[in-house]
Length: 70
Image (cartoon, rainbow, N blue to C red; front, side):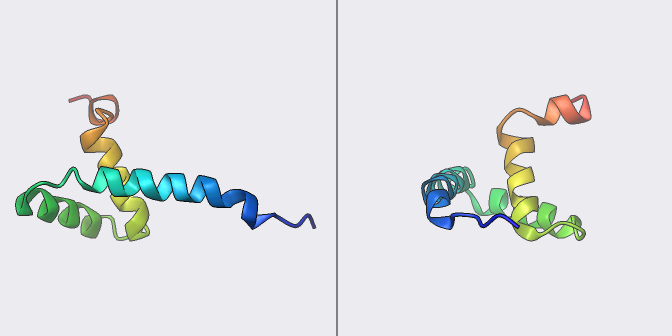
């Protein structure tokens, strides 16, 4: 079984976390934040982190129209 060098993944991990923190600034009001939390709660079969990422993709990347047809 091959071993994985986790040190080589550190820059990618930092980059992804940095991007996530930047994206989290999208929630400028309490209502925006509450809508995100409600979305995450509705996706009970998802890990909350993944539901959060999905919310960003759907509502802030313009992907929602591609998925829902809106």
